[in-house]
Length: 199
Image 1 (cartoon, rainbow, N blue to C red):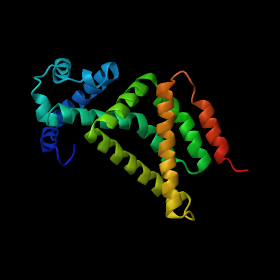
Image 2: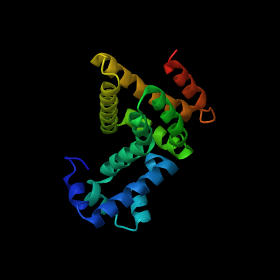
Image 3: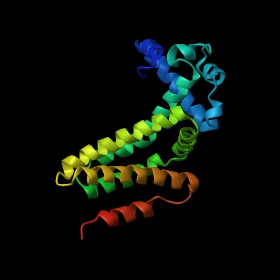
Image 4: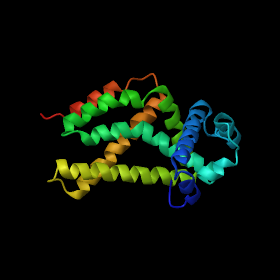
């Protein structure tokens, strides 16, 4: 829900409304994984939810609003566990270990299908591209803030650059796995561990 989505806010203001909205987002995720964005039509979602297609406007201001909600949820599902573990790590070695533990789940076949759809849509749809940009900047801000705690002697430019490099590495690794899902991520993670290991 966003400030420009007052209808969605009103619709999800009750427990029943929130449950229905959640159901529709889950259905959208399933359809996205099964057939990409073209599969998320008002009719397909309504049929699975056993509701009238017009209710999508009530909950999301229409199908485009549902698409945005699905994109946000897919991004959260794929990336947040990795980022949360990374940011909770007390030191660099622990952060790499956390990534090694989380990446296999993030790179599950369904998640890779979702990640591919998110990337393509962000490149073609200005609204989705802005959503992705804002999310990436927010993540980089979180990483930079964590680096300010763990590496207080680093200048701000180094923290911000490292945060950008970290998110780029995660995006690049996911892209590699999308293009070549049979190639294991472990060698890349082992190389990362070696790069940050103390001499």
